[in-house]
Structures are given as structure tokens and as C-alpha cells.
Amino acid sequence: MGRDGMSGHQAAIERLLFAWDGANDRGDHDRLGELMAGGALSVEGMEGSWAGAEAVRAQYAAATRLYPGGGARTHHLSTNVVITFDGESGTARSRSYYTMMQSTDALPFQIIDAGWNDDRFELIEGTWVWRSRHIHSELHGDLSHHLAPQVTPFVE
Image (tube, helix red, strand yellow):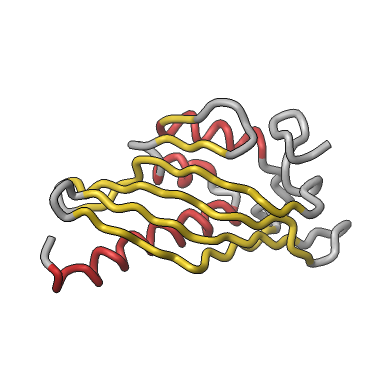
């Protein structure tokens, strides 16, 4: 990975980060699974992790409330993206902030969660793939319209 190609690699990883946000907001759990097919997901404050496409898809399907008309009625923003590359090993690490907003018929528009993500990627045959995502959820608002209480400790 030469220095001239860094911006292309950065853009490719940013596209993965933003694709995750979009799929999450649309309630496209299959796409979330596809994105994490070669990796594992974990969340600070929750036991265990979910590895591979089917486990990630199933976790999101069980945990996320979806609404008529489509999606989770959320909007994720990923900002402050910092990507560090290791050209020798063909790996990268990203740290980014996220802010999640939601509005439903019963919940006025508001921020419901914020934190940061620690992501690791590997370059396989010219394509970046996710190896892991660890979500550090730090600030919580009213998550009761977004998450199923039986699946997550963030909702009573």
C-alpha cells in the first residue's frame, strides 16, 4: 500500500462505516450481516460477541424495533473518523464517534445514544473487509423506542 493510494483506502473504509449506518437506519439486518461476514461484533456492557453474517443479522433482528413504512426511524451520524493503516500487514484500525437520533409517532425527534466505535479491517485481494467492531455506548437517552428490552441491557 503506497502513500499515494492512502486516500483511496481511507475512502473505501469510510464507505464501509457509512454503509453500516445506512443499513442500521433502514433496518436492513441482512446487509449488516453481509458487512460483518468476516468479522465479529461486540458491545461494551453486553456479554459475548456475534461473529459472522448470520449471528450479526440475528442479533440486530432481535434487538432492533422496526416500524411500518420501513426502518428503525433512526438516523446515525459517524464523525471524527480516524483511520490508521499498517501497510505491512494490510490492516487498518478506525475510531469514530457516533450519534444516534430517533423520531417516532410517540417519541419526538431527539438524540437517543452516543458513543464511539473501534473497528478493525483487513485488505483482502484489494478489498477492505471488516474484522471487528466494538461499540462503546457512552451516553444514553430514551432507547425504549429503538431496542427490545429482553435483548439489551440499555432498556428497562
